[in-house]
Length: 107
Image (cartoon, rainbow, N blue to C red; front, side, top):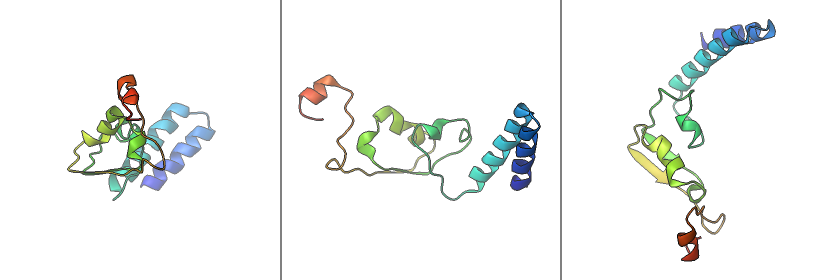
């Protein structure tokens, strides 16, 4: 069923019916995500239209030192029960948005 929607969307796109194609492709994408056991996304993308109805019970943030607190909260507030932050400050330095924190040696 998902495959049929994706094929129909591609066919409509070739016919120049972009709006209808977008609708079928969005529906197919949402069904694929809903059926997935694991969804990989950036923190910001987790709050996008495609994942609007999705809840994340487990969130793993890789390179967490590169993510701002605000960006990290996007998937967390969407039903997170388990949060794992992974990052190596020796590999990539933390992202510092505060001049006072950076001046204090936190960056």
